[in-house]
Image (tube, rainbow, N blue to C red; front, side):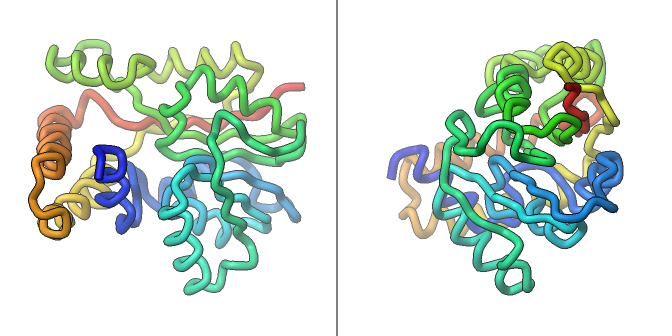
Length: 250
């Protein structure tokens, strides 16, 4: 397998493919003001295996389209949703977030936890606005600096990996410039990185290496993940995902 396939193989058995938590998804739902609205149409973009999707389906009266480019992730989402009795509320869709098939102004809300980086924050919030009804809600989490000063190795790593990493103030300004009114923001706590993402990921390294015959490519994938984990553990006060909830204006 190439590096891309190996990453899918490593992450497909994870409850989450990035930092996050069910309580944080619920907090974003509260900030959205959608709990009392009936018959919502929601897209969860870059849903992975559907941790947030299933919280949305449990908490809201909504038909949810779960969008991901990886069929393996959607297969696992479908299995989990059926096991939890949520299969009739979630429709999986294999599609690129850059070529979504939704009609203009057809969605009450768009959710995306830890995935908008694939497109870029500025590009994503601008492109997805087209699909939201006037007054529709956008809820996304994205890599965010928590401090204005930070260690050079951390700064260099994340600006290289994701040039749109920025402070919350900068990202909120981007939302306003794109035609949104912010409803709320909060940073993910360290447990959303360590307890629900990194520790389960580390626990899968051994099986991942074994089934890939300890190949050099598989070892390189694990080494990169270990480096990222160690970097985060040294710098929890400087960086996290920020969760942004905003309403489309006009």
